[in-house]
Length: 81
Image (tube, rainbow, N blue to C red; front, side, top):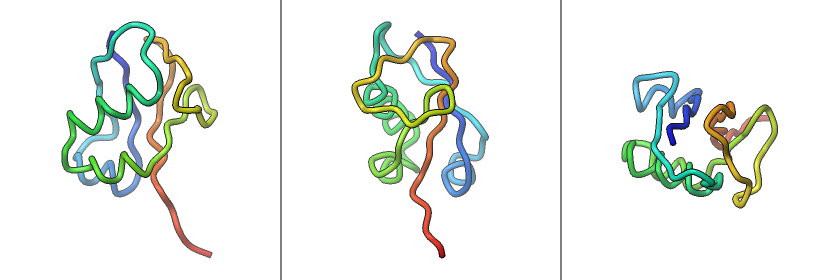
Protein backbone atom coordinates (compact mmCIF):
# COMPACT_ATOMS: atom_id res chain seq x y z
CA UNK A 1 0.00 0.00 0.00
CA UNK A 2 1.08 3.60 -0.44
CA UNK A 3 1.46 5.84 2.59
CA UNK A 4 2.05 9.58 2.39
CA UNK A 5 4.46 10.89 5.04
CA UNK A 6 4.55 14.62 5.76
CA UNK A 7 7.99 16.16 6.31
CA UNK A 8 8.95 19.28 8.23
CA UNK A 9 12.02 21.41 8.96
CA UNK A 10 15.45 20.05 8.08
CA UNK A 11 14.05 16.76 6.79
CA UNK A 12 11.77 18.62 4.36
CA UNK A 13 14.71 20.77 3.25
CA UNK A 14 16.98 17.74 2.76
CA UNK A 15 14.42 15.92 0.63
CA UNK A 16 13.23 19.03 -1.17
CA UNK A 17 9.56 18.18 -0.67
CA UNK A 18 6.93 18.56 2.03
CA UNK A 19 5.86 14.91 1.72
CA UNK A 20 6.99 11.54 0.40
CA UNK A 21 4.89 8.55 -0.61
CA UNK A 22 6.37 5.22 0.49
CA UNK A 23 5.28 1.71 -0.44
CA UNK A 24 4.76 -0.77 2.40
CA UNK A 25 2.86 -4.03 2.79
CA UNK A 26 -0.74 -3.99 3.99
CA UNK A 27 -0.73 -4.29 7.76
CA UNK A 28 2.60 -2.46 8.00
CA UNK A 29 3.69 -0.96 11.29
CA UNK A 30 4.97 2.53 12.02
CA UNK A 31 8.46 1.01 12.14
CA UNK A 32 7.93 -0.39 8.62
CA UNK A 33 6.92 3.05 7.35
CA UNK A 34 10.01 4.62 8.93
CA UNK A 35 12.20 1.91 7.41
CA UNK A 36 10.74 2.47 3.96
CA UNK A 37 11.21 6.21 4.34
CA UNK A 38 14.88 5.78 5.34
CA UNK A 39 15.47 3.47 2.36
CA UNK A 40 13.73 5.74 -0.13
CA UNK A 41 15.30 8.96 1.16
CA UNK A 42 18.92 8.23 2.11
CA UNK A 43 19.59 11.93 2.68
CA UNK A 44 17.47 11.74 5.85
CA UNK A 45 18.10 8.12 6.84
CA UNK A 46 20.02 9.06 10.00
CA UNK A 47 17.36 11.56 11.02
CA UNK A 48 14.60 8.98 10.44
CA UNK A 49 16.27 6.55 12.84
CA UNK A 50 16.04 9.13 15.64
CA UNK A 51 12.62 10.51 14.67
CA UNK A 52 9.11 9.46 15.58
CA UNK A 53 6.13 8.89 13.37
CA UNK A 54 2.86 10.60 14.15
CA UNK A 55 -0.24 8.87 12.84
CA UNK A 56 -3.49 10.83 12.69
CA UNK A 57 -2.07 13.54 14.93
CA UNK A 58 -0.70 11.29 17.68
CA UNK A 59 2.75 9.87 18.29
CA UNK A 60 2.70 6.23 17.23
CA UNK A 61 4.38 3.32 18.95
CA UNK A 62 6.67 1.45 16.56
CA UNK A 63 4.30 -1.52 16.44
CA UNK A 64 1.19 0.53 15.61
CA UNK A 65 -0.46 -0.61 12.39
CA UNK A 66 -0.73 2.03 9.68
CA UNK A 67 -3.60 2.14 7.20
CA UNK A 68 -3.43 3.54 3.68
CA UNK A 69 -5.55 6.61 4.46
CA UNK A 70 -3.85 7.46 7.76
CA UNK A 71 -2.17 10.86 8.00
CA UNK A 72 1.49 10.20 8.80
CA UNK A 73 4.10 12.77 9.69
CA UNK A 74 7.79 12.44 10.47
CA UNK A 75 8.56 14.28 13.69
CA UNK A 76 12.29 14.87 13.87
CA UNK A 77 14.34 15.69 16.89
CA UNK A 78 14.10 19.28 18.04
CA UNK A 79 16.11 21.21 20.55
CA UNK A 80 15.89 24.59 22.08
CA UNK A 81 14.88 26.24 25.22
